[in-house]
Length: 127
Image (cartoon, rainbow, N blue to C red; front, side):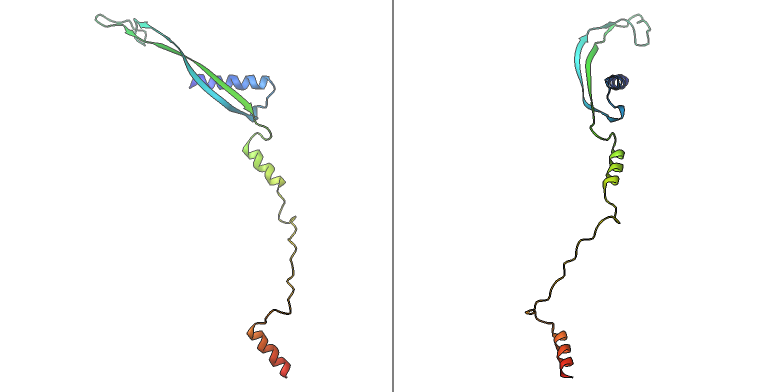
């Protein structure tokens, strides 16, 4: 874990040196590959104490690896907070919006009048 953090810090420093924006960097690719296995014959315990009488030395293989990390720079804004703020600025405000034009419905003479309205109109004509 410490080695990968050190690798990330080194990659960021290299990207900044090349002129990339540090706040816009992201990890494009990261991988670790197993390399060599070095055979070790331990005569000592891990705490550097020598083996006592009747103790047996053990094999302790030392495994090495090759790690790579590729950083990329995002185009545009650096963070999602910046994107949200910019989107709010671009969006029109409610007061600035124009209402949609209303289309008036013209009554056609062939339309039938409702029964209650027809009776009311006939009553007015009779008087």
